[in-house]
Image 1 (cartoon, protein in one colour):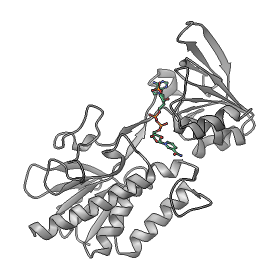
Image 2 (tube, helix red, strand yellow):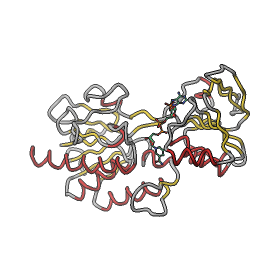
Image 3 (cartoon, protein in one colour):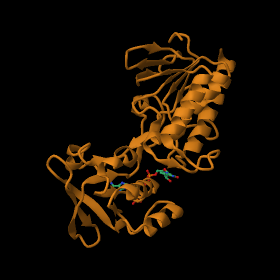
Image 4 (cartoon, protein in one colour):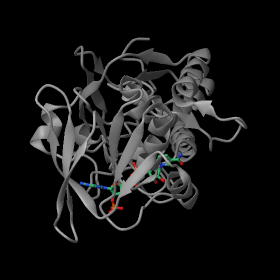
Length: 310
Ligand code: NDP
């Protein structure tokens, strides 16, 4: 497909992007999808997805995204590796430039760039990233088989990572900064019932220790101010996500965290022909199924825009 001849450019390859692609391609619109730097999105770094309807036994996240991609391909989506590095929404004709400098002038753009893991921003955490520090238990947990690990966070991601790691490792130390977890009750109960998971409440990581590889952490109890040391081999950071919307910040209305604002009940942004879907615009639900649903909405909005304007 020529980059000049594109009805819909989809940026991102999570559930929102692929669902949008399935709908626009199936509707006969010429669709290009750029996968971005984490093809398949966040589901490729998760384990069992148990809450996506249609999979009564659950499905592994990476397999689910392969299925999504195959479904989009089947209807003719032109799927490209790589990133869209910049956009220009000042002219009437939308413009996007891919990382290999291909210029694309699509009639519509569906943004499905999702969100990325947040870090604690400690110097020691960054220095030891990939040397025992990770944000993905499914990717890296295997390296800590029968060892001791830590997980930082109190949300569903932290609970999921701690539970996953408890199956592989000798012990999991969960560092929660308040005296309660934010995770859903079912996940909290699973964590609390798991004998291999040891919870440090009201605690924050002060330093990640180790020269070439993680050997432990210093944590501080934010109530008593007491500092303790935990010896461990791996540390998994699971403290939430940041939307991947930086390249749009000069053009699109966003909230203070960078989530793109859409007109309620639609995926329309403040720029005509540009639609935002999935976690890039949703800081509330952030589920695969809600992302897929908003991808569908984006596709229908783009289809309607094209038939009304071209
Ligand atoms: P959340 O924003 O829900 O939770 C982040 C957690 O990290 C909170 O406990 C927060 O603490 C803690 N935290 C944030 N910053 C720091 C910091 N600097 N130091 C220490 N702790 C910190 O993010 P999640 O990624 O867990 O979940 C995101 C969304 O995805 C949620 O809606 C969740 O329900 C959903 N999800 C669903 C899953 C499922 O259904 N299977 C699996 C994974 C995620 P505090 O509470 O004090 O703010």
